[in-house]
Amino acid sequence: MSALLTAPPAETDLSPSDAAISPATLRERKDRRRAFALLTPGLIWMALFMVLPMIMVVYVSFWTQTTFAVNSELTTASWERFLSSPTYLAAIWTTLRIWLIVLAATIVVGYPVALFIGLFVRNKTIQTALLVACVIPFWTSFLIRVIAWRPMLGTEGAINTILLKLGIISEPLTFLLFSEFSVLVGMTQIYCVFMVGPITFMLGRIDISVIEAAQDLGASFATIFRRIILPLSLPGVLVGSIFVSVMVLGEFATAASLSGRKVNLLGNIIVSQVGSLKWAFAAVAGVVLTIIITAVIALALRLVDLRKEM
Image (cartoon, rainbow, N blue to C red; front, side):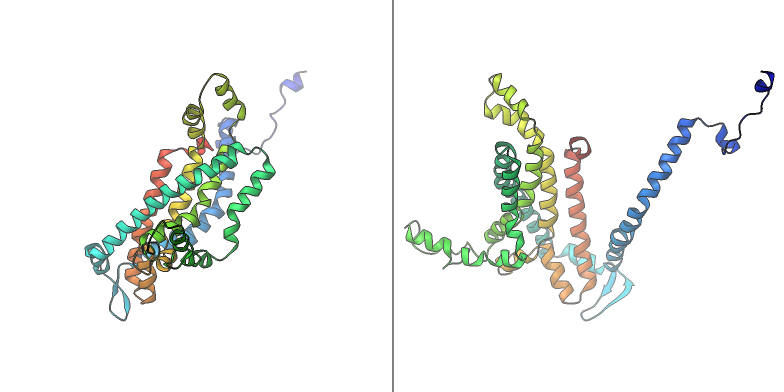
């Protein structure tokens, strides 16, 4: 018995400094090191393919741009030219205006579709089939989907032909094609599915018993929509808005094809400047566009806490 009481303590692999630390603290440190090890590959990937290229674009935006060449001597001439030109400032405003209109249009068009698929269709197979039907246009090339609007919106296109035969108009509508209207129509159709998907996902998570309980208490559909359905679907609207915003703000092909180059977006400026080998000026427009997209996403994430809602 006395031998057991006087036996030396068992040896451990803890250092003298760790011996005075509680097991909970040691476990927390171990978990932190494990988390850092798991995050390291992703951080390296982001640094190499996101942060470093963006730093390079900012650096190139300060290069000296001449008519036929560019050199690495730093200057603010390209920035001064961009920020003082009414043409390029107007392109920023046009980009923001079209983004807001298309964003609102995709919500107005996409929300009812998502509401029907996610809430009124309870069969998962049918839901999947309807979502696949929404994605079918993406089985073709992006340019084909854009150009397909030309025979629809042209003066001799399907819409004008139908309206003329019905006697609704006496002459073809010229504003349907090669205008800002055609750009809005094309972008809304192309990107609406990115609004439908996230909203449908959030609506599908709503417990139908909650809606049934509200109906049993005498709530109308308008009250149920305002107090139950809409709040629970807002995270989906936010995610869809981020998807649509990123793609619309960076657009150039739809505007170039359907507006007849009458609508000048920041994306079109970048493409034209790169085609003219004016790298510094294209980098300026790229930095401005990146700042706008970052600000839009940051604002959207402040409206709804996705980590809490999802």
